[in-house]
Length: 333
Ligand code: CP
Figure 1 (cartoon, rainbow, N blue to C red):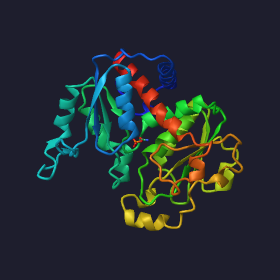
Figure 2 (figure 1 turned 30 degrees about the vertical axis):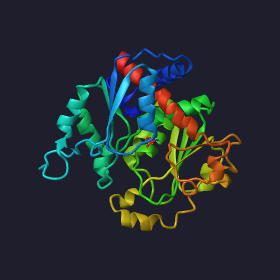
Figure 3 (figure 1 turned 60 degrees about the horizontal axis):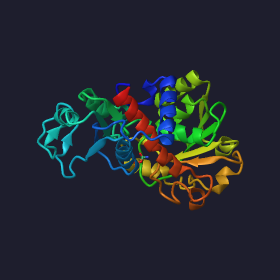
Figure 4 (figure 1 turned 90 degrees about the vertical axis):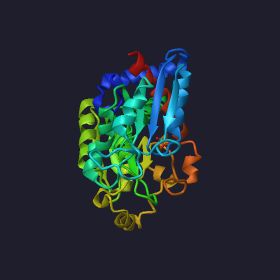
């Protein structure tokens, strides 16, 4: 692997290999595997899990890492191309990234969606332009339209819990949230479930259909694996027989870049908060998944999050094993 930029670029055998390696590293530690290796982590946006799990994972493999959060003790970085840099940013990523890479063996980048131009965010333009100037293997720590580390950890979580791949019903449901949120996690979740061969249903209110390129990518993954992908606004029908209810809020593509209009559009949708009643017609052992962070009693009720269905901490722990596998393959082959 030359980088870990998105699951769409990986063959199913490569995903299977990473999952097997993640499970092996969980069972059998390799505390010297990456001795002397350095991972650079560039965070343009906040994080708890991604930051901590990469640093912990690198340390468990014998390597080390450093974190740069532009503007927090370091220079603000410009990411736009061809601009006159007479604003707050003192340095451009075109210099900063090769410099950071010269200290490290791999570089992780977190760069969320700009949230103003849907076409640009769907292209992942800002993230891609940074990867282009990175001379060492790059890792996507969540970009505008993908979160492959989360997706890999979610796949491992479903394997760990014996959730069937072929034929297992995976419901990705939209949930209410006070702010318009990016499309990266829902795009990654729908993709990974489809690639795993599951029967994927995207449940969302009218006006929150995932953009066609996201659905097309998921359909292509389903075609490879024998799974299926569909969307509906019919909650009762969607939840029947579900093995997984995966909740996430995302912005309405109809009002992308217009938070005020978007807020008005979602105002009546507070009922989209996952409660125990959502599981009444689901499979008896249906699990609740969420990438975290999650707002309690906004996205999901306490009773679900604190109950036996919730596997959110398991998912978060698997971030570390999954990413250790990625680092192992990137740096050792
Ligand atoms: N799920 C996830 O990426 O969490 P953080 O934003 O805390 O890294």
